[in-house]
Length: 59
Image (cartoon, rainbow, N blue to C red; front, side, top):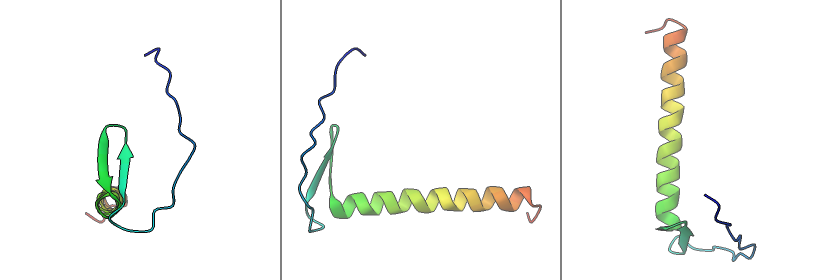
């Protein structure tokens, strides 16, 4: 991977849930991105809780 990535340092303020994000080749509305991020965060938190509970012997 010798390709150089050009970084676009300009940005616009997103003021609505219907604005569109372009991340690599994927596009998301802000609303959908928030849903996906929240879901992923909740899964990580649940996995952490379960792992800690098992380690402490509560299961």
